[in-house]
Image (tube, rainbow over all chains, first blue to last red; front, side, top):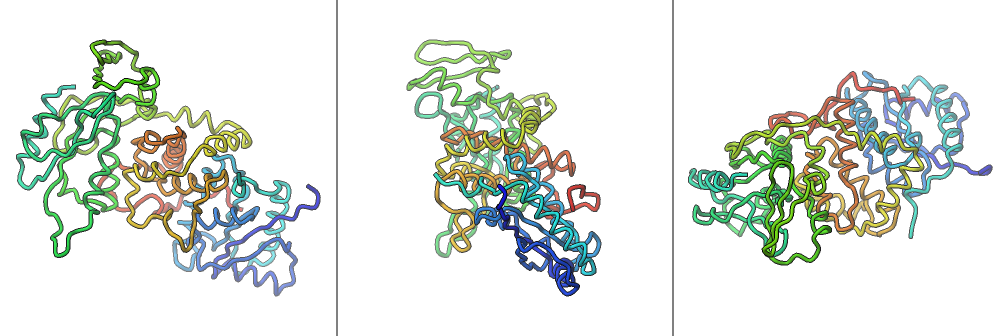
Length: 139
Length: 326
């Protein structure tokens, strides 16, 4: 599909990744407009239900981003997120959904450039995968 | 299986102080069915039995009994509950105990080392329309099935329940009384799961779409699950409504994904979900996939330790693999 534009939701943690995205903007780095940012207080707050809900509403890819290990504002929230999504991604794969659609990344508040690069990378990957159909299928 | 030992164990449990009832198995009203029963006196204990037909788990009755709304001004029951547990049931109980769903002090566990039970769907498929009471006995790898004055022999592998083929814990892990000799355990290798994992994404997607498209969303799998005892279930929430009620392939996928993931690191592998499914969806594949990953990646197994402080998804290890992280 040549003119397919993916819809991507990014759950960014308030303390690192959201500030990173902010820095990316104020430093005038460009990243694709396909990314829609949702701010959460911590990557550990992201519930798999939210991701499922996003997929159902027609989102083609989800990015979850938090502080680097050891840097979490809440000391350990990102470790919980990591364990949860290791398992969740493998489970998605078992159900026949490409796990690449769910990306986890660590971006700190000073990594504006890295944030823009990452979002470009993710958008390209999802663009190649095409739209998600599994969750929106009706009878 | 020694029926006398079962009755004696029940009587012994009932004779202890404060034991209100013992939950066990008795004859069903027709065919191959076995019914759960609450035995309150030693005389009643005579009707208890255990046979390869006892494929149902009784653990649910414990949490149901505890969640019963009290009468106005009524006191919370102090009585103890006795229950017969097989290996898989004991794991479920361990898990509930570690989650503080029930207290160990209010339980008398009578362990049954279980050599495996029959899948009733397979048995009824082989002998359809049996209405009179039937009996099944296991002798050296062969089931002897008696009904209507006839008896026939069927190989154990043909009728054995799927969950029992992979059972690594036939002897209960936790019990107060044990009625028989321990059964030797075999190692769980998750071979069927490995086979499924090797398929391509498209094949897996097609397989599950095919399976889930049959789902009628009766929620029997949730109701039968001993670990699904939350009073406020996510499936009944209306605001926000995480799982919608429409029955279509997309929504069914979401339902099964959510159900299985809520049991990640908690499923004890008793196979109740698969047993009660009216449309025969292989739900244990989902649960065992999560169990396999938990064991392989985090060396975690649900229901092994009733004293376990932290649950799987509410704990972490600094060494958890992060190789997929961008």
